[in-house]
Amino acid sequence: MHMTVFDVQHGACALVTCDNLDRMMIDCGHNGENDWRPGNYLRERGITELDLLVVTNYDEDHVSGLPNLNEKVNIRSLLRNKTVSPDVLTQLKSEDGMGAGIKRLVEMSRTYTGELNPEIAPTFPRIKRKVFRNEYPTFTDENNLSLVVYLEIAGIHFLFPGDLEKAGWKALLENDASFRETVKKVDFLFAAHHGRENGKYEPLFEDYECKPYLVIISDKKHAHQSQETVSYYADQVKGFSINGNTRYVLTTRSDGTMRFDFGAEDRHFSSIQVNYDMTQEEGTGHT
Image (cartoon, rainbow, N blue to C red; front, side):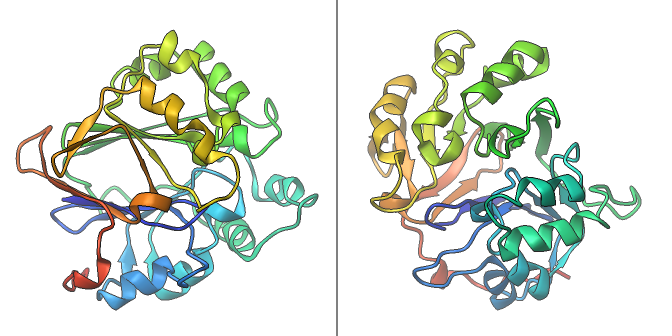
């Protein structure tokens, strides 16, 4: 079992592959510099089916690779914040314009229910999943309507908060006791809003006892404000040894694509690789 966090610049895309080849993708951004796209990546490895696509945020950088993904593989199920209807999503994007990825997501959202027939649904062995979200119209901005995804993979706890901003963090933590308990368990935190200042919520660490080993930032080189929060996040975490070095923050702009390989026993990694060379992968097709 492994999870790959792809370098998609100022976007997001991660793929979890179970031992039985069930696959879950969290967001589906693309890399504009080298034209890496998630659908091409899967098809080049003989993979023709994705069991679950999770969309955490309704901005283009989280779904810019969706047209390619949708054309190259069969997406069996879609998970998103369903308090935002396709018509509302279209309305929300009317001010800034709708990119090709969001347009495809709107089309898919009209037919995908987010659930599969239990008799044919993937089992995702050794994975537990919870999702949290603020509701529309309590919030009317895309970032605070992010779907916050908690994955326990082989006993190791990951939190993907999308582009949640301070007001969204505050609302979830104050109103949802389950979320308050969940953040205490997090081992690896993906920084909200690609590490920008407006996604940094100090009470998460100071009041709600979130003490991960490591923060991961998916961001682009020399752009936006993500670099400004690295020192802050480094001070909040325990640190984790990777290749003999204690690391506190990983960023795709510096560490490239990352791969987390999970051991046979819970709460053990067999390896964590940064600047992972995807060209060395063998075919891992899905039947």
